Length: 499
Image 1 (cartoon, one colour):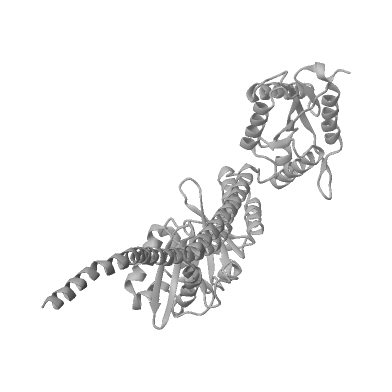
Image 2 (spheres, one colour):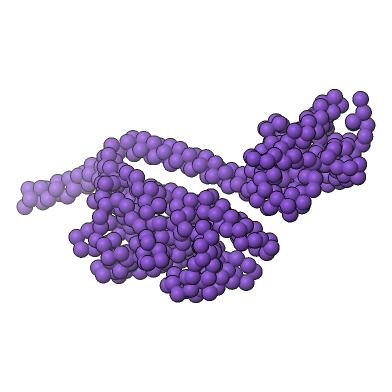
């Protein structure tokens, strides 16, 4: 009995000893396993998000490219429509000419200009009557700016129509038709996966154009209907993105085909682009993102560091691209469409900015007005008048420095601001350069027309320390030149012209 009791006592003493050795190892191991498990879960989730974000950016690039193309078409045609709205006295030939300009600038295969009953002309001046056409009835019933036009007797191929409304009441329309096939070049070339497809959808989910791999989701011509037959929830999610004009990503399975669908709105009406990538390819990208995490914390730190660098570089590249696009858009907004010079607002803004930065830099402002321009338009036509202005803009932009500010600030009025003209001799030299230009400036191919101008000059900062004052001084110089008989240059203060 004594022996048995002793043995049991020893066993009881050994139990705390075993726990004493196990617990210090077990607890940290459990903690490490929990941390590692959580890290792996987070890494897997992060990998999925990174892959999805990368695919979303690819889709966004295509959407931006197509959207920019369509918006540029709308901008060009909108400018032509503005001209038609502003001048109700245009002859039929001049209207046809403007429509032809829109066709040339946009490379449209067909343009129709018509009233609310569908009667009008096309870009060749031929009469059209489209009042009974289904697409025209849809235009009358909606405010959409994009329209899908199916192939029919009137339209020999499937097209996208960009719709511009004329007049304050919107009772006239200009329709610019582009064959769907013209956009195939924008919707191809994706190298994410040979099994991926890219499709252009309208507000009803119809597939207007597609490229890449064949898919059961595209076979019926309507992606929402194809997806909804097997996965109503996914179809509803895509439908919600179309209705709200928001981006969306959804994994979808139709028949035996599993894909990740990425939708990005076009930003015009409710059209958008959807990229369909095979789910197996997406899963492979995710596995590739996190499969080497077994390298524990050292490898994880390296991966996180490299990933952070990639994100930073991607962000920097994205910012550079965004800044470039922003700059291009700003340049387009600052440009006078007829002459390619600065428009009135841009000219004034740039001159004011220069004055603020260089308040003591002696500079010159020329304000010139084409002599008898109304007579040119009346006798030789507005098209020739436009040629005069365009040629004048091109001519004066050549004889000055690229850093100088040259703009069209009125119908036939131009402004030239020469930066840093330090001496009186240089001022006289630049004034003579402008005078000499108009002594030999001619427009016309067969018959040459001598273009002359009255020019007023003011010197900054002597005759005005701000834009408004300097402009008034140059304008008074212009008035002085006209009063003296036109076709000459006059300074606000005659002292600058004296030898």
